[in-house]
Length: 419
Image (tube, rainbow, N blue to C red; front, side, top):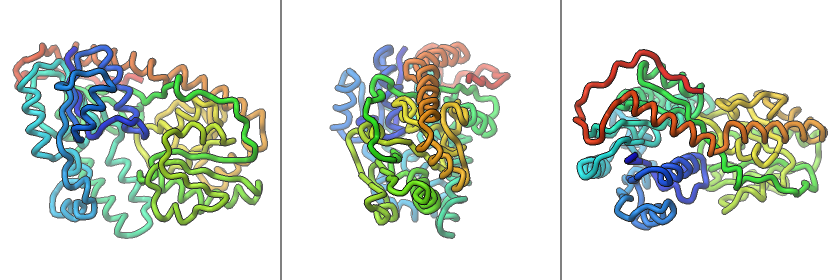
């Protein structure tokens, strides 16, 4: 198949959730299909993608990032003067990107155009190819949760405005496509409410089991770990909440316990809490040694959408996980079987303490969590579902490459809940 892949940033290096998903989907596409890539980035990033995915140089095209992505505060003020979300203005409303899309589509014929992230899905795709929107998150729902836990009135009002704008933008983006991919059945249901009748498929996030292998190192002392891009609000909020509400309760029961917070661009509020007991690493090239050295992986998330690749990585490394309902939302995690789940600070602390004291329970979770990941979330399994979804989308669309862009869509009677 001939596929045009539209992405908002380079997937190299694949060091956080969105980049990881884009990296592994593109890696699979490039190995099996005739792929072109269009993204925001630099010529150097284009060269890295062409080399990394073994693509001809002329198949990778970059568009300069909008000024809004480099001047956030000014961009937020500008967004207030428009009917659009700041998120949408950053990646979904660029004249340069629209021109580049038009030129690429006019120059070649494609069977599929796949767009990553709903804010990127508002560009006009003047083509007869089947249009697929890969919704990594349900952004309006993510921002709604941010508004609930914002620590100031200004931030609450800002996130509520973003929620309102994003909900309309995501609905419009879904309706402009022939099919929508969601990372979980939970997200699929939310997207179905936004765009009834548009075919939807669950294409889960995955984990590279050959990379995230369990080591043989035994933690020398009780230690906890969390990994994630710390500039991302759900991650920083989760860690600040953990340090303020949960960690003190754990320390009362287990003096000397430590928490290592691994991830790029930690906010000042988090850096101020660093101590001998709270290690904040900042950016690291490889998170695996930090996960391997820990006794328990914690994911005390109160905000989020999509699914958390960090939890899949920890389970794949045979680390026992304690998380929240939102942390494991969308994953087939069973409390007490593949992970421990608790939403209140006292309950979360008790589950962590229980794991640190109970070697038998730790081993049970390590075994069951690993089996879950290998059965359902290995990227090889995900790629099979992706191929099946492509075939189904093309079967429904019945679109030969180069067909009239104004073709009539086939009547669609029932949403596809492929779980």
